[in-house]
Every structure is written in structure tokens, then in C-alpha cells.
Amino acid sequence: MNSEKLRLYDGALPVEEITNYWYDEFKTSNYGAIITFVGVVRDENGIDGLSFDIYEPILNSWFESWQQKANEKNAIVLMAHSRGDVLNHESSYIAAVCSPKRRVALEMIDEFVEDFKANAPIWKYDIIDGKRVYAEDRSTPINGAGILS
Image 1: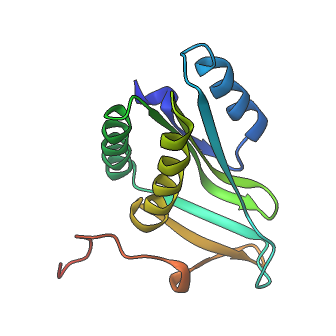
Image 2 (image 1 turned 60 degrees about the vertical axis):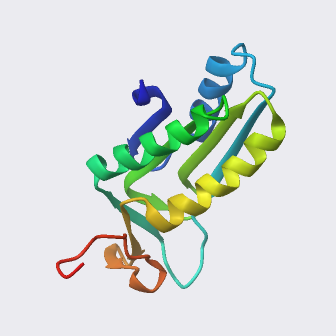
Image 3 (image 1 turned 60 degrees about the horizontal axis):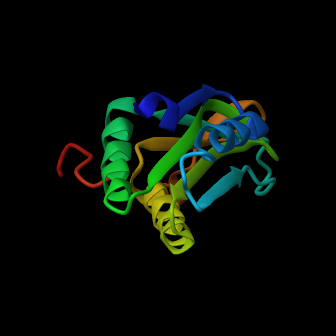
């Protein structure tokens, strides 16, 4: 079920392929709104891009909890994320919410993206001169993670 709703890719995301697939897949499901968010790697602080590690078991659990929240509102959430390197001006993250009502979709996409940034088990590294440098200053600890938690 979630394999088509949660997709992981090696490298940059094929944005048009993913968003067109989601639109084609769900446009006849009687959703009045399909809201999509595409995250793009910014060229800043001298980086060449970002690199990502993902802990899939926790990501799957986190995503399933969001699917349940969405289902309570007759909606669904969709997500694609990159593993490994993504260069500047490429996409590493796409999220979408499909809902019969636009207000539900608009509110849920905001909550989903913010919760993703705070709680998804994805570690981000800067790519500088071809090397991965942990982006500690832009990382958020995961609740319950760590030896002393």
C-alpha cells in the first residue's frame, strides 16, 4: 500500500515523473484537491548540494502514522525523498496531500512538511568539495534517539 505513497530514490528526484504519476493515479479518486510541495536544494553557504541518509524502519512508521491521520479526514499523504547526493537546484523532497476538501489538504500539507522537518529519520550532510559534511547546525534531534534518552 505505502510503496506507491512513499517512494525513496537514489539521487535527485524526477519531479515531473513523480508529480504527474500522482496526479494521473489520484485525479479520478474524487479528490477535490491535490496539493504538492516540492523542496529544492538551495545554492548557499558554498555547498555543492546535500546528501541524505535514511533510517527506513522509523520513516515507514512515521509515514504510516501520517497516513492514519489523513485517513481520518478522508485524505491521503504522498511522499518521495532522495537517498545519497542531490546537487544544488535539484529536488530531494516532494510531498502531497489529496483530499475531497481543499482546506483539509492545505492545512495538512503544512503540518506534514513541518513535522517531516522536525521528526523524520533523515540525516542531512552538506556536499563541500566532493565531501559529505554533517549539517549539525541544521539538524533536529529525533525524540527518543540517543543513548541517554
